[in-house]
Length: 446
Ligand code: GDP
Image 1: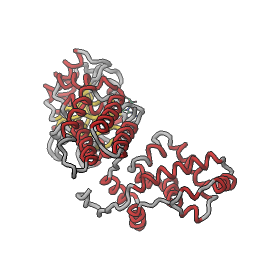
Image 2: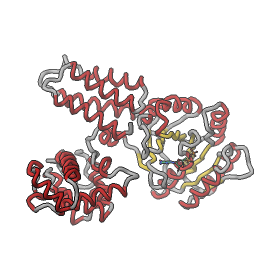
Image 3: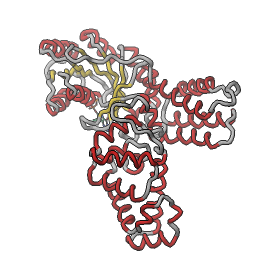
Image 4: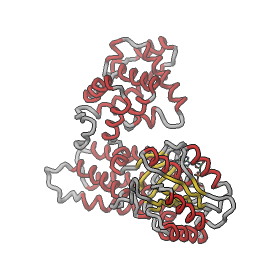
């Protein structure tokens, strides 16, 4: 189960509970069982799920809650808080300071994406004004230095390594010393991963760590490792002082629940996630927006930032106005499709809305999504103005559907499919009704 599905399942469980007339112990238990099942299917460790369930029950003590309390809200909030707690170890990780030398060591199994992530991390900081440098202390894997060299050259980041030297500790120390002399403020050491957890790997990590005295050790984990996540993360933590976690390949079809387990195992926060093979496909990880999105609550602060960032200034008020009205017509859908096809970035705005991107424009299927959007638009071209401006799907009786199908040369089924998509998007849109639109920089009310 990928994370989007996990979010969907949890949101559905909460919704079902909300639909019940009375929320009693039985309804609460059903809801919590449903959520637990979804978490387990996403590879969150069993013990974590069990603890979470117990915690929520303790917080939501139905008998003791006075009648006036909004039980639904309390339960939803408790689920939100528990998920945040799972992902937040309670202490921030070390953050490098610009102008002051920091050494950051990367550890993780071979194939986890460690070397790629080292460069992404360096590149991210370089863009923000740091002076990073990369040291390849992986002498185990032939080709590791070449790979790092290639990535570093592409991103114009200085690097250090050797084809001849076989002692990783020696290379790590030399590299760190060299870059300290050059006043580099973020020295990143990539270590060997080997293919499985074994004593030699952990011993080597310990030695490199002792010799280079890193300010931070980052554990890189592939999101697809499933239930093994907890044990793997714990094994690394027991060998070296892991202070932060980066989860890679979150773009794939991996079960993402390992992220939750890794945090619990290392008691360290996830600081970034990798979302693709390219250097830019790297995102800062924030617990609350992540859980909001997971629960289909929408990431408002990220969403508003995105609007200000990518929508042309003169179009912003109109779009925001329409958002706050909450009514979503087919014409509005048509316009958004046009934006998505024409201007690309506006698609990014909608990708922040739960439901818009994950199903309409799944990553990696851009071509098919575009074709689908164009197909929808052709059908909408055959609609009357009244149809386009209506917010009432009931208007579309059989004869109208047949007329639209004929007019656009598509089948009735295609038109029905498009109407379903419209209804789905309208529902998401309607959630924004009455949304107070904050000015940029004033997100405190969200
Ligand atoms: P290492 O052996 O741990 O150093 O792993 P590499 O950095 O060589 O990465 C292994 C493979 O995973 C390479 O093909 C990378 O391009 C790929 N990779 C790394 N991070 C990501 C990610 O976030 N998403 C995807 N899709 N691929 C990734």
